[in-house]
Image 1 (spheres, helix red, strand yellow):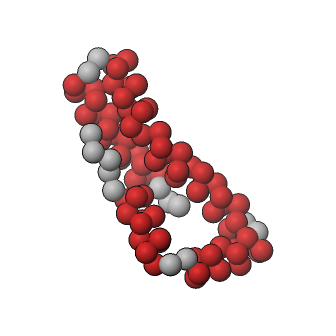
Image 2 (cartoon, rainbow, N blue to C red):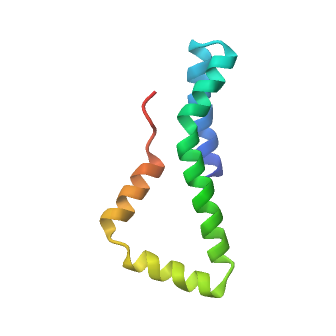
Image 3 (cartoon, one colour):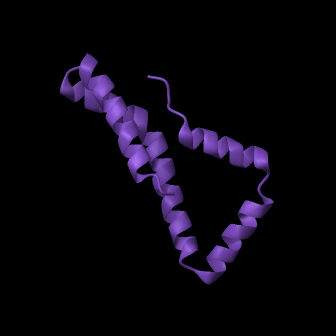
Length: 87
């Protein structure tokens, strides 16, 4: 998914926000609670896309899925990926 740098920047944003307002232990707890869902989503999908991209059948299936997925769903997924949760 090419999200390494993007997720690192988001992590820095959230972590700096929580560290500015809380003791380190509490800041890291809040950081984990706020980032876990999105990080799991990115990791799971990156792994799945990687597996498919390294298989001839997988590439064909991936292209077919992308072609058949309604634009509304693709836009929602992109919006979820590229938007920040409110702190």
